[in-house]
Length: 299
Ligand SMILES: [Zn+2]
Image (cartoon, rainbow, N blue to C red; front, side):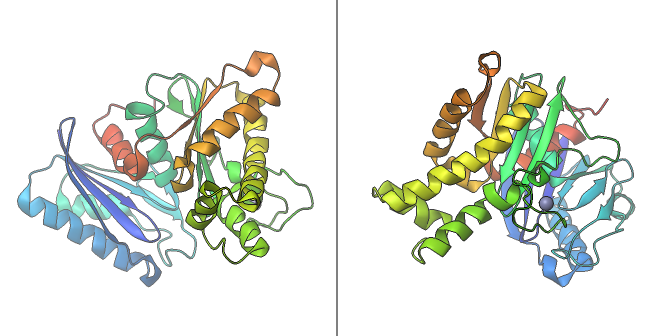
């Protein structure tokens, strides 16, 4: 099966072409999301058209930001990162235009499915995925199937209330996990301490040069990450937790987390492993390969 897979984000569209199990090529270009849903759609169509002019394909998979009705392939809700994207009937529009089956899935779900089928979660029955960036996204796999919940929006782990009455969150609540444990939260705290810690790279570079301040800030942040993970471990007793997001590639974080989690959970939960996602920013397109080729099926 030949597959075109796209992963639509607030800043970029990643895309890839698969022939059978082989990734033939992948690339990235700006999504121009701030110009609105119609512009994003125009970019999606031009990428597919360009690939289609060079290569044959049997199906198209779209991973996208926003809440997705994956059965009808529509955007149920998208926030202001992509204005006027809500309600777009992506599947119908693209099937009418390109005359092949189109699958649409939410980007966090698609990335988790990619990791489940081809990446760090391969072969695991029950595991969790969390992605740390501007916010915190999550996915739950039970018996190798993505758990979606009653309205299809399960695993909003970023909004677990970790500090009641704490910092305000975009969701309207206070003290949410992502206000303390996201990459944004680390940078916000570190920047308030010193302007030299202006991004994740700068903080970890100082840490690598034995900055005690950087170490203290990172250790406190890793502790915040562990609070959420420990709650989830007690609920799900997973064999594995896969962590994604650019910052997680810093080996110190995963090592420290495994240590803290052992220290702060009951012995019967010590079997859990915390590990790094293995597909990097291609997880989403791999997820769409799994869905469109039916290597992953919801039921
Ligand atoms: Zn929240």
